[in-house]
Length: 164
Image: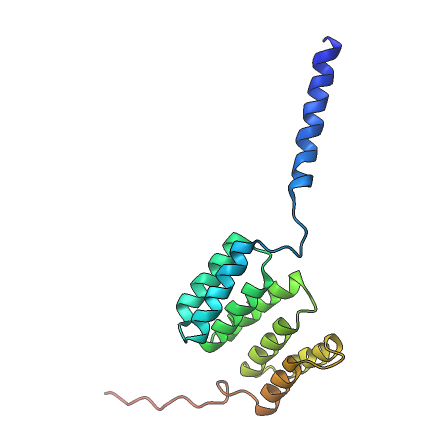
């Protein structure tokens, strides 16, 4: 094989291998479209339209799976729907992206309280104290939930009418 085609082939192979590495974004850059969808979802959440908000948060994740804020917002929606296991799973995903996300730790702790897992919620509180050494609103929020205790797990179901 002549020298020029070999060099050309080696150059193309090197370019093909190097191109994906230069096109990647850093982990802390979230695509603007994903951020905008998150903002719209928060507006719907504030208006009490939880299912529509969740749909926008999920779309934000489809646009950029590194948007940890969308995971936390989905967890908040799940809590409002009494889906505490889902809330914990979503916050776990956010914490994989940033282990020191105060919102994710607090929301996860609140979901644990509702499931009756007070020792695990207390562990989240301790972790949150380390993350927020100077204090943050999430500390008071989680402490209030722990002090209050589970509201759903301790609630007694309404008696069902007997049928014969």
